[in-house]
Image 1 (spheres, one colour):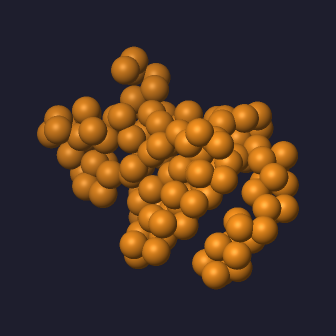
Image 2: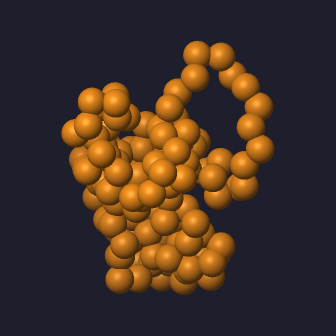
Length: 132
């Protein structure tokens, strides 16, 4: 990985003692918020506008597996995030639900049209209502 990507990932994974203002995109804010909330698994079906979220978590997961063994990054890999691209939106949602049933925080991200597809399927609605 190049240095710019390492710096961006390091900023995502670093917690700060005092709150401070930053200027980031909405997708970057979602990634940061999920990490601050302790998300342990991210399941995604990529598509604009959520692709940037998937790419960030994919990079974070690879970084934690590879760079986390280096002493200067050891603290950033203490609780690695599992990331997986799914074959469709329904599978992404079901994997996130299964991860959450295992008592680990999960995030499922997909494009807005994918959310509509998952929402109208009767079998998926049963799981969504049971998980909330």
